[in-house]
Every structure is written in C-alpha cells, then in structure tokens.
Image (cartoon, rainbow, N blue to C red; front, top):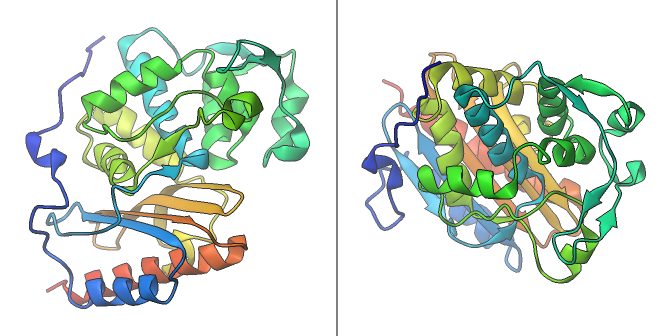
Length: 298
C-alpha cells in the first residue's frame, strides 16, 4: 500500500498578514455584520480554492472547538487507514466508559446530552469503524467520537495537525470529560486552522486523493444545516461540520459551486445567548460570500 505523506506546499501556510485578494464588497459586508454584533466574538476565514482569494477576520482568536474537533479526528482515522494500521470495515466494540484526561478516573456519556442517541443502543456490540466515523461527523455523535478516539489518540491527531501547519488547534481529549473541562483542559481551535484543515481536504494534498474524496462524501452527509448551508441556494453541495456548546456555535465548510469550483468558509462565534441568533449570523456571512464570489465570475 502506498503511504501518501507528502507535506503541503509552503503556500498553504499563508498568514493573514499577507495581502489577500478580496471579492468586491465582501469585506464591507462582513465588517458590517461584525459591527452590528458588538460584544460577540465572531471569527471568519474564507479561502477560494479556485483563485486563492481570501478574507480573514479575527482568524487567530481561540475558541472552544466544540464538535469541530471531530474533523481532525476523522483526518487521523484516514491517515491510519492509508498507512494500513486501521480499516474502515474493521469491527469496533462500542463502549461507554472512558478515562478522564484530568485524573485518569472513569466517566460515561449520557445519551440525553448527545445529538445522536442511536449509538448508545450499540454498546456491547461491534459496528464497522466507518459507521462510527459517519455518526461522529453527520450526527455529531459524542459516543461515536470517544470510541473512535480509542483507536486514534489525541497525540495522533495533533501530530497530523502539525504536519499540515495547523499549529493553533488543540485536540487534547474526547468529549464530555467534565473533570477535564472544569480544569480548563479543553479542545480549542481558530478559524484559520479550521480553514487549513478543510483546504487540506479540498485540495487533496495530504493522505491521498481517495481519502480526501471519502472525507468529503462523509462531510456532505452532515444533518445540521442551519449555519453555512442556510445562506446558500437550495441544492448547493456543502461538506461541513458544525459545533456548538453553551454560547458557542461554529460551522466550517467546503462549498461547491455549480461550475465545479469550491471554497472554504469557516465562521466561529461565541457569546450569543440563543443558537438561532448565532446561526443567523453564520448564514448571513455565508450568503455574502456566495454573492460576492458569484459577482467575480467572468
């Protein structure tokens, strides 16, 4: 089996200090949204895979990653599959007991706190690894995530993130580890690093083209569509991952245009009391990006 471990080109490791080519009026519209939501933290990272145009706002501000951390975990799974150390069809016995990062004590997840209670019915049985990965992404299953992270550990995820130049994101642990949360041991990210991760998938530069296509297919199955997809024309293909906890709501996506081109958009928010308010802001930014980009097509 060929091990595709080529590093990304140096151009991928751009910084916001570099001159960015901005679509007409997009910067003005995004700034208007940020200005009208003073007191809220909003970060934006946009990168067009077609021509390299970009726009960044607060892209290096650190946020609780919420469920967006499940995308780096998926990348680590596919790297292991490409190396031959894991198989997507291999059976995984589902458990609901994990070890706290804080003190090594055991803890279990509560289905009432999970967006995907179905996986709890599988405890004690074996299911294919790919099934767990799909539930981890498409339904944001916390139980599936922690079971997957029994196979690809946080250190494996972080090693891969460093390889692609995502130096700000931190994946320290699985989810619902309350003791770790209480002691500030949390998964965190920036809009910039999530942009790098989705760009990595879209440009098929790391792991393999086949793995990238498979990950896009999984991300296209995302069931929560009130963020970035809500600002796009009906039927637009969006490979994305949402993430939310109290007063935190994110969406990160590869958006595919009808002409076959694609772009990455990441919007992270903190401080909105209601999820719907944050989703509205994310959708508005998504709509502005789509319109500005369409205006630039010859």
